Image 1 (cartoon, rainbow, N blue to C red):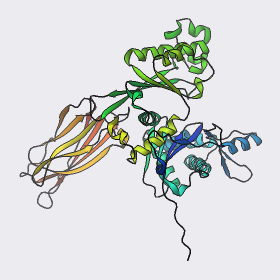
Image 2 (image 1 turned 60 degrees about the horizontal axis):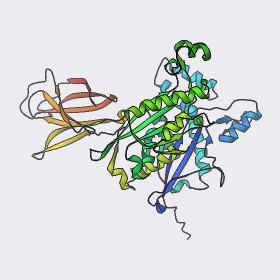
Image 3 (image 1 turned 120 degrees about the horizontal axis):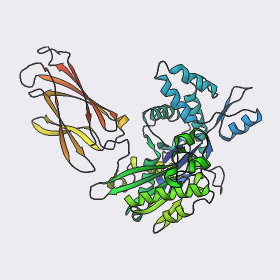
Image 4 (image 1 turned 180 degrees about the vertical axis):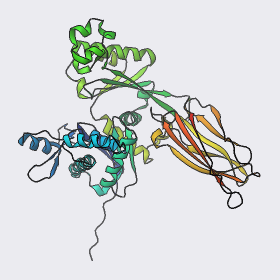
Length: 469
């Protein structure tokens, strides 16, 4: 009998899925060393060709879907356009499927773009499978231990689309996470030397023709763990006269953009881009002190950054690279697997994260204990909890909100109107919590009664509560 040794799971992946490309970076857990950077997959040795084109095309002769460069080449041969913006198409499909009169319009739009009804998600899965097949020359699927997906925007629908893709691509793999680009950048910076985090860190994102995104990571070093807060500003798609005077729109902008005062970044000439970025960075510097700056994205190329680049690099370390997000996602995977002690010293609060812990004081086995319900740091669209309690007496329940950035604590008291009168500790309540926005929590309480002695009244209470304040 022959025995085949199964490959050892040892690779941590970071997958950056943009609208025009996909990048994959990875770490080998058997070779981790301090300060080790993830390796980013490229098409050939010695070539810095990291972007796998996010394109798909269905061969009109065979019906077979092809992806990446092959899709670009084959579609050109047939004189047609490939299917692009694969993630956006799948998210649109997810969105319209949940809206009943608008669902048909979404299906029609998907069909016009080259995908049939219900097909956009499958095309995305096919494209990601193609990317993993390219990676298999360096990392076998059986060797993958954990994966983090990162995108420019990570919300409930995007996460749902990627979860379905992950279920199809990594069956049985439990360690899969989803995060936005800025959180991946946070993890990338976390793995750099401490000096870079001495003050705030600036990120200049030039991946969109429409606007430059400026992001700041700030650190509250008075807390334990240290809390990191992101701040975001955008350059482009704004009132251009703010930078260039009231005559700018009449001279340079045409059409509806000029009428609204919104000027895409790509519509500006080199001097205008430089001036706009310089002004925005200078305003941020009035609020934050930076110890490091990172620049990423093709829009920043071309030599137009003169005054703005001098301002960004003056008195601080500045870095430029176009693989920050996939590498940061790989670093995030490493942190999630508990393979770096740095992750325990810092706490990241994203724009969509709960900035407080929600819980309540309960009695268990005669002892007063704190029961955690919602944890700070969780993305609001994923935050939910359910618990059954016995109400000791009265008609109120009390939750505790503890801020992680300020450290203060406050009580949230909810009165249950017209609660049935019962003896002490004979009312069982089912409490459900879920977030409706980053700062809004929906509390649902249901009277479950007390067995056959006190049947449920069927009463329910709902209250929406402001938190994260």
